[in-house]
Image (cartoon, rainbow, N blue to C red; front, side, top):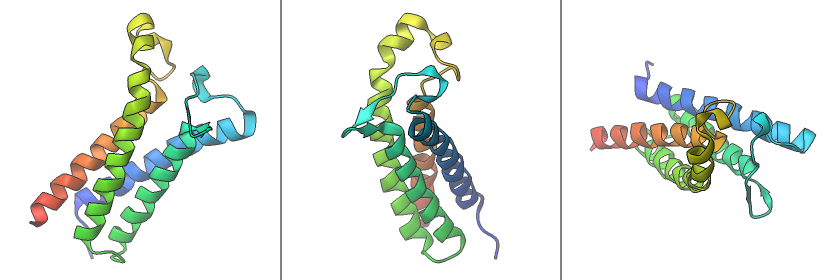
Amino acid sequence: MKKEKNVIALFALSIAGLLFSGYLSGIKFFTETCAFNESCPYFLGYPACYFGFALFLALTVVSFQIITSRMYDRKGFKWMEVIGILGVLFAGYFTFKEIPELLESGLQAYVLGLPTCALGLIFYVLIVFISSRSLSRRN
């Protein structure tokens, strides 16, 4: 059974986000410092990267269920879209808070060029875009 490229792309983006947020979460959990010497935003008293990890874990589980045909494509794409939108709102909020630092210091202020929340935001935006596009093709 051959899966469409968009399903594989969603799975790959979810895994990449899971690994990235897992790295950030692991560094924070085990060393109590933030990776890449960045500020460490908190949400509800916990590091934001923990919530990013949970969102990417949910996206990975759903995309895996689509790939293995345990979930109908349409339902899976809808779940991917909803979780992705939550991720966009979440990462977007923390990225927006980093804009003053970006304007003041530029991209050299961050080891990876952008705040880690902005990198997560890029993953979420791509996931929402691919999910929405896949849903519109199914209608």
